[in-house]
Amino acid sequence: MKKNHLFPHQFKWIGWILFIPFAILFIMIDDDFISFPTLMIMVGDLNFFHETNEPRGLFAGIGTEGMFHEICLVAMSLGLLFVAFARERDEDEYVEHLRLHSFVWAIKVNTVLFILGTWFFFGGLYLWLVLFWSFLLLLIYTAKFQWELRKMRKGASDEE
Image (cartoon, rainbow, N blue to C red; front, side, top):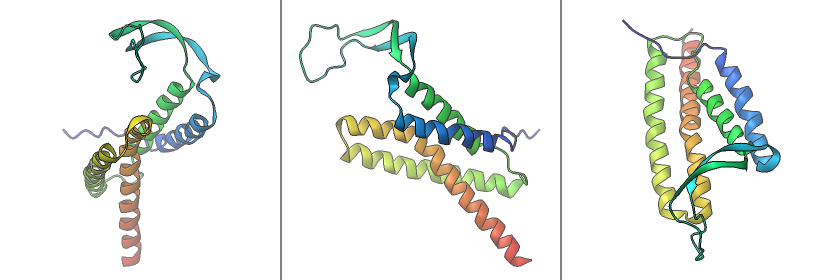
């Protein structure tokens, strides 16, 4: 029994509608735009460069925090997931092959970029790059898959 775990084709547009506006809002709007009490799990002392009297262990509790960026990140993640794994109108075995090939290629490229970034970027910039890499895999996969799909369709139309 063969199962296809893809979303319906309409989810591709829903994904773009989620990803693009929330990516723009993430860049443009301050995190304090929306604040509310939330469960906070973190290291007690986030100041690594200066000695403080704060506890250095794991901290968990309820606190009010700016949550706008977190909302944007969740929406962007769901959007890219919907775009990457939405069924094509003409989903067949060759399209499945292109999906697998593109996914393996994206994992390899993302790993090389992660290694290079780990070697050459440090401090706060490295943390921003790690955040970006969480989206980069799906972005690379989507770009490679759409590129291969376009090449396949262009080749098929050239033969006719």
